[in-house]
Length: 273
Image 1 (cartoon, rainbow, N blue to C red):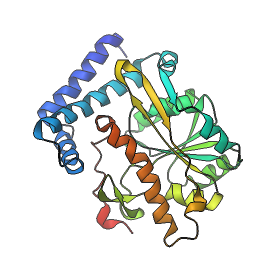
Image 2: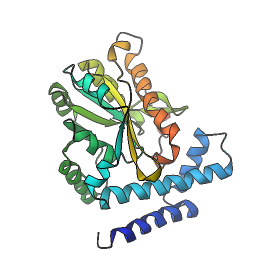
Image 3: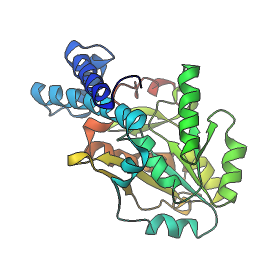
Image 4: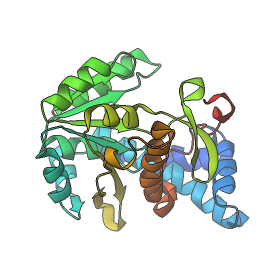
Protein backbone atom coordinates (compact mmCIF):
# COMPACT_ATOMS: atom_id res chain seq x y z
CA UNK A 1 0.00 0.00 0.00
CA UNK A 2 3.02 2.30 0.29
CA UNK A 3 3.76 1.95 -3.44
CA UNK A 4 1.79 3.22 -6.44
CA UNK A 5 -0.78 0.62 -7.43
CA UNK A 6 0.85 0.00 -10.81
CA UNK A 7 4.19 -0.78 -9.18
CA UNK A 8 2.56 -3.14 -6.71
CA UNK A 9 0.81 -5.06 -9.50
CA UNK A 10 4.08 -5.32 -11.42
CA UNK A 11 5.93 -6.62 -8.36
CA UNK A 12 3.19 -9.14 -7.50
CA UNK A 13 3.07 -10.57 -11.02
CA UNK A 14 6.87 -10.62 -11.13
CA UNK A 15 6.94 -12.59 -7.88
CA UNK A 16 4.41 -15.04 -9.32
CA UNK A 17 6.51 -15.56 -12.46
CA UNK A 18 9.63 -16.05 -10.34
CA UNK A 19 7.88 -18.66 -8.18
CA UNK A 20 6.77 -20.63 -11.24
CA UNK A 21 10.26 -20.56 -12.78
CA UNK A 22 12.19 -21.16 -9.58
CA UNK A 23 9.94 -23.91 -8.20
CA UNK A 24 9.34 -22.25 -4.85
CA UNK A 25 6.07 -21.40 -3.07
CA UNK A 26 4.99 -24.99 -3.89
CA UNK A 27 5.41 -24.59 -7.66
CA UNK A 28 6.70 -28.16 -7.86
CA UNK A 29 3.56 -29.40 -6.14
CA UNK A 30 1.39 -27.34 -8.49
CA UNK A 31 2.98 -28.92 -11.56
CA UNK A 32 2.75 -32.45 -10.13
CA UNK A 33 -0.94 -32.08 -9.26
CA UNK A 34 -1.71 -30.58 -12.66
CA UNK A 35 0.01 -33.56 -14.28
CA UNK A 36 -2.02 -35.93 -12.13
CA UNK A 37 -5.36 -34.38 -13.13
CA UNK A 38 -4.40 -33.74 -16.77
CA UNK A 39 -2.25 -36.77 -17.69
CA UNK A 40 -2.50 -36.04 -21.43
CA UNK A 41 -0.86 -32.63 -21.02
CA UNK A 42 2.72 -32.51 -22.24
CA UNK A 43 5.63 -30.79 -20.46
CA UNK A 44 5.12 -27.50 -22.31
CA UNK A 45 1.42 -27.39 -21.44
CA UNK A 46 2.08 -28.19 -17.77
CA UNK A 47 4.68 -25.44 -17.66
CA UNK A 48 2.21 -22.99 -19.21
CA UNK A 49 -0.50 -23.93 -16.71
CA UNK A 50 1.91 -23.61 -13.78
CA UNK A 51 2.85 -20.09 -14.89
CA UNK A 52 -0.84 -19.28 -15.32
CA UNK A 53 -1.63 -20.43 -11.76
CA UNK A 54 0.92 -18.06 -10.19
CA UNK A 55 0.05 -15.17 -12.49
CA UNK A 56 -3.59 -15.63 -11.52
CA UNK A 57 -2.75 -15.62 -7.80
CA UNK A 58 -0.76 -12.41 -8.23
CA UNK A 59 -3.52 -10.70 -10.22
CA UNK A 60 -6.13 -11.76 -7.68
CA UNK A 61 -4.09 -10.37 -4.78
CA UNK A 62 -3.70 -7.08 -6.65
CA UNK A 63 -7.43 -6.89 -7.35
CA UNK A 64 -8.48 -7.65 -3.78
CA UNK A 65 -5.95 -5.40 -2.06
CA UNK A 66 -5.37 -2.56 -4.53
CA UNK A 67 -8.22 -2.06 -7.01
CA UNK A 68 -11.16 0.29 -6.57
CA UNK A 69 -13.92 -2.05 -5.29
CA UNK A 70 -16.73 -0.31 -7.16
CA UNK A 71 -14.87 -0.46 -10.48
CA UNK A 72 -13.99 -4.10 -9.86
CA UNK A 73 -17.57 -5.09 -9.07
CA UNK A 74 -18.80 -3.32 -12.22
CA UNK A 75 -16.51 -5.61 -14.24
CA UNK A 76 -18.52 -8.70 -13.20
CA UNK A 77 -21.13 -10.31 -15.44
CA UNK A 78 -23.56 -12.74 -13.79
CA UNK A 79 -24.26 -15.68 -16.08
CA UNK A 80 -26.95 -16.75 -16.88
CA UNK A 81 -28.43 -14.26 -14.40
CA UNK A 82 -29.88 -14.13 -10.90
CA UNK A 83 -33.07 -16.04 -11.72
CA UNK A 84 -32.14 -19.45 -10.32
CA UNK A 85 -30.79 -18.03 -7.06
CA UNK A 86 -33.72 -15.66 -6.56
CA UNK A 87 -36.20 -18.47 -7.21
CA UNK A 88 -34.43 -20.80 -4.79
CA UNK A 89 -34.45 -18.15 -2.06
CA UNK A 90 -38.14 -17.49 -2.66
CA UNK A 91 -38.82 -20.96 -1.21
CA UNK A 92 -37.94 -19.49 2.20
CA UNK A 93 -35.31 -21.99 3.33
CA UNK A 94 -32.19 -20.10 2.36
CA UNK A 95 -29.51 -21.33 -0.04
CA UNK A 96 -26.04 -22.81 0.35
CA UNK A 97 -23.75 -21.40 -2.35
CA UNK A 98 -21.06 -24.04 -2.88
CA UNK A 99 -17.91 -22.82 -4.56
CA UNK A 100 -14.17 -23.26 -4.52
CA UNK A 101 -10.90 -21.37 -4.58
CA UNK A 102 -11.26 -20.54 -8.24
CA UNK A 103 -11.02 -17.14 -9.89
CA UNK A 104 -11.27 -14.12 -7.63
CA UNK A 105 -13.57 -15.85 -5.14
CA UNK A 106 -13.40 -12.86 -2.76
CA UNK A 107 -14.90 -10.72 -5.52
CA UNK A 108 -17.62 -13.31 -6.11
CA UNK A 109 -18.70 -13.01 -2.48
CA UNK A 110 -18.83 -9.23 -2.72
CA UNK A 111 -21.08 -9.31 -5.79
CA UNK A 112 -23.36 -11.84 -4.13
CA UNK A 113 -23.61 -9.75 -0.95
CA UNK A 114 -24.77 -6.70 -2.92
CA UNK A 115 -27.95 -8.61 -3.75
CA UNK A 116 -28.61 -10.96 -0.81
CA UNK A 117 -27.50 -11.30 2.86
CA UNK A 118 -24.38 -13.49 2.86
CA UNK A 119 -22.78 -15.49 5.66
CA UNK A 120 -19.32 -16.76 4.71
CA UNK A 121 -18.04 -19.83 6.56
CA UNK A 122 -14.27 -19.29 6.72
CA UNK A 123 -11.21 -21.21 7.79
CA UNK A 124 -9.11 -18.76 9.86
CA UNK A 125 -5.69 -17.87 8.43
CA UNK A 126 -2.56 -18.90 10.32
CA UNK A 127 -1.41 -15.27 10.39
CA UNK A 128 -3.81 -13.59 12.86
CA UNK A 129 -3.04 -10.08 11.57
CA UNK A 130 -3.89 -11.01 7.99
CA UNK A 131 -6.92 -12.95 9.19
CA UNK A 132 -8.31 -9.89 10.97
CA UNK A 133 -7.55 -7.73 7.93
CA UNK A 134 -9.47 -10.04 5.57
CA UNK A 135 -12.37 -10.30 8.02
CA UNK A 136 -12.65 -6.48 8.17
CA UNK A 137 -12.45 -6.32 4.38
CA UNK A 138 -15.28 -8.82 3.95
CA UNK A 139 -17.48 -7.10 6.49
CA UNK A 140 -16.85 -3.77 4.78
CA UNK A 141 -18.47 -5.28 1.69
CA UNK A 142 -21.49 -6.58 3.59
CA UNK A 143 -20.31 -10.16 4.12
CA UNK A 144 -20.79 -11.64 7.58
CA UNK A 145 -18.27 -14.30 8.54
CA UNK A 146 -18.18 -17.21 10.95
CA UNK A 147 -15.25 -19.59 11.64
CA UNK A 148 -15.86 -23.10 10.35
CA UNK A 149 -15.40 -24.68 13.80
CA UNK A 150 -18.67 -24.28 15.68
CA UNK A 151 -20.40 -22.56 12.75
CA UNK A 152 -23.54 -24.72 12.89
CA UNK A 153 -25.88 -22.46 14.93
CA UNK A 154 -25.00 -19.34 12.93
CA UNK A 155 -25.43 -21.18 9.62
CA UNK A 156 -28.83 -22.61 10.57
CA UNK A 157 -30.04 -19.23 11.82
CA UNK A 158 -28.94 -17.49 8.62
CA UNK A 159 -30.72 -20.06 6.47
CA UNK A 160 -33.90 -19.71 8.53
CA UNK A 161 -33.74 -15.98 7.82
CA UNK A 162 -33.67 -16.70 4.09
CA UNK A 163 -30.03 -15.78 3.50
CA UNK A 164 -27.17 -17.25 1.47
CA UNK A 165 -24.44 -19.27 3.17
CA UNK A 166 -21.22 -19.54 1.16
CA UNK A 167 -19.06 -22.64 1.59
CA UNK A 168 -15.77 -23.36 -0.18
CA UNK A 169 -15.90 -27.11 -0.60
CA UNK A 170 -12.62 -27.83 -2.38
CA UNK A 171 -10.17 -28.22 0.52
CA UNK A 172 -8.85 -31.44 2.01
CA UNK A 173 -10.93 -32.55 5.02
CA UNK A 174 -8.54 -35.24 6.28
CA UNK A 175 -10.02 -37.56 8.91
CA UNK A 176 -13.10 -35.30 9.22
CA UNK A 177 -14.16 -35.86 5.62
CA UNK A 178 -15.82 -38.46 3.42
CA UNK A 179 -13.93 -40.32 0.74
CA UNK A 180 -15.17 -39.16 -2.66
CA UNK A 181 -13.51 -38.39 -5.97
CA UNK A 182 -12.31 -34.90 -6.77
CA UNK A 183 -11.08 -34.15 -10.28
CA UNK A 184 -10.88 -37.87 -10.93
CA UNK A 185 -8.87 -38.94 -7.88
CA UNK A 186 -9.78 -40.13 -4.36
CA UNK A 187 -10.00 -37.24 -1.89
CA UNK A 188 -11.35 -36.38 1.54
CA UNK A 189 -14.28 -33.99 1.08
CA UNK A 190 -16.13 -31.87 3.62
CA UNK A 191 -19.71 -33.18 4.03
CA UNK A 192 -21.11 -30.05 5.74
CA UNK A 193 -22.98 -28.65 2.73
CA UNK A 194 -24.74 -31.97 2.10
CA UNK A 195 -25.62 -32.54 5.75
CA UNK A 196 -27.03 -29.05 6.27
CA UNK A 197 -29.00 -29.22 3.04
CA UNK A 198 -30.47 -32.62 3.93
CA UNK A 199 -31.34 -31.40 7.43
CA UNK A 200 -32.96 -28.10 6.43
CA UNK A 201 -34.26 -28.79 2.94
CA UNK A 202 -32.41 -25.80 1.52
CA UNK A 203 -30.94 -26.26 -1.99
CA UNK A 204 -27.24 -26.12 -2.80
CA UNK A 205 -26.35 -23.80 -5.66
CA UNK A 206 -22.92 -24.37 -7.26
CA UNK A 207 -21.17 -21.20 -8.34
CA UNK A 208 -17.78 -19.94 -9.45
CA UNK A 209 -16.28 -16.68 -10.64
CA UNK A 210 -13.63 -16.72 -13.35
CA UNK A 211 -11.53 -14.06 -15.05
CA UNK A 212 -12.08 -13.62 -18.77
CA UNK A 213 -9.97 -11.86 -21.40
CA UNK A 214 -9.61 -8.14 -20.90
CA UNK A 215 -9.86 -8.34 -17.11
CA UNK A 216 -13.60 -9.02 -17.05
CA UNK A 217 -15.03 -11.44 -14.51
CA UNK A 218 -17.96 -13.81 -14.95
CA UNK A 219 -19.89 -15.12 -11.96
CA UNK A 220 -21.40 -18.44 -13.04
CA UNK A 221 -24.49 -19.57 -11.13
CA UNK A 222 -25.32 -23.23 -11.71
CA UNK A 223 -28.56 -25.13 -11.36
CA UNK A 224 -29.63 -25.65 -7.72
CA UNK A 225 -29.18 -29.16 -6.32
CA UNK A 226 -32.24 -30.48 -4.49
CA UNK A 227 -31.64 -32.53 -1.32
CA UNK A 228 -34.77 -34.56 -2.12
CA UNK A 229 -32.83 -36.23 -4.93
CA UNK A 230 -30.52 -37.84 -2.37
CA UNK A 231 -32.61 -38.16 0.78
CA UNK A 232 -33.35 -41.77 1.66
CA UNK A 233 -30.75 -43.22 -0.71
CA UNK A 234 -27.96 -45.49 0.55
CA UNK A 235 -25.19 -43.36 2.02
CA UNK A 236 -27.11 -40.18 1.17
CA UNK A 237 -24.55 -37.75 2.60
CA UNK A 238 -21.70 -39.27 0.59
CA UNK A 239 -23.64 -39.32 -2.69
CA UNK A 240 -24.82 -35.73 -2.19
CA UNK A 241 -21.31 -34.58 -1.26
CA UNK A 242 -19.98 -36.18 -4.45
CA UNK A 243 -22.67 -34.46 -6.53
CA UNK A 244 -21.83 -31.06 -5.03
CA UNK A 245 -18.12 -31.60 -5.69
CA UNK A 246 -18.79 -32.61 -9.28
CA UNK A 247 -20.88 -29.49 -9.87
CA UNK A 248 -17.99 -27.27 -8.74
CA UNK A 249 -15.28 -29.33 -10.48
CA UNK A 250 -16.57 -28.45 -13.93
CA UNK A 251 -15.57 -24.82 -13.40
CA UNK A 252 -12.05 -25.88 -12.41
CA UNK A 253 -11.68 -28.08 -15.49
CA UNK A 254 -12.84 -25.21 -17.69
CA UNK A 255 -10.32 -22.75 -16.16
CA UNK A 256 -7.52 -24.85 -14.63
CA UNK A 257 -5.11 -21.93 -14.48
CA UNK A 258 -7.39 -20.14 -12.03
CA UNK A 259 -7.69 -22.79 -9.31
CA UNK A 260 -5.69 -22.92 -6.06
CA UNK A 261 -3.35 -25.79 -7.00
CA UNK A 262 -0.92 -24.86 -4.21
CA UNK A 263 -3.27 -26.68 -1.80
CA UNK A 264 -2.56 -30.37 -1.12
CA UNK A 265 -6.10 -31.39 -2.03
CA UNK A 266 -5.63 -35.18 -2.13
CA UNK A 267 -3.35 -35.72 0.86
CA UNK A 268 -6.09 -36.88 3.28
CA UNK A 269 -7.86 -39.42 1.09
CA UNK A 270 -6.51 -42.32 3.14
CA UNK A 271 -7.91 -40.79 6.36
CA UNK A 272 -11.43 -40.16 5.09
CA UNK A 273 -14.40 -42.16 6.28
